[in-house]
Length: 122
Image (cartoon, rainbow, N blue to C red; front, side, top):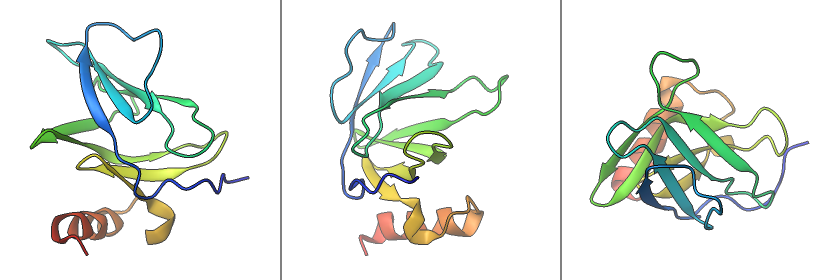
């Protein structure tokens, strides 16, 4: 069952760390590995607050990427939890975008639309 907790509009900041922190702060994404980032770890933006770990190593699959622009983090492709709350979302410029608003596919066009909304603040 999909968690209906509000995720849209939630904002995240980020910190670069050498090791996985023992305690994760709310609304904070940790970039693990200062010289060579290998993991993103943060709490789910929905009410479940489960810990999400995203691999950054291109040798492994699945693999995510991140960018930081004007001190705001973006993660791609989308994050889609297949267990637990089943949340599906993007993080663009530090803001959570609920992917269910654009359909439940991870297509190029859905991501392009979310980027358009983010850029033009529609």
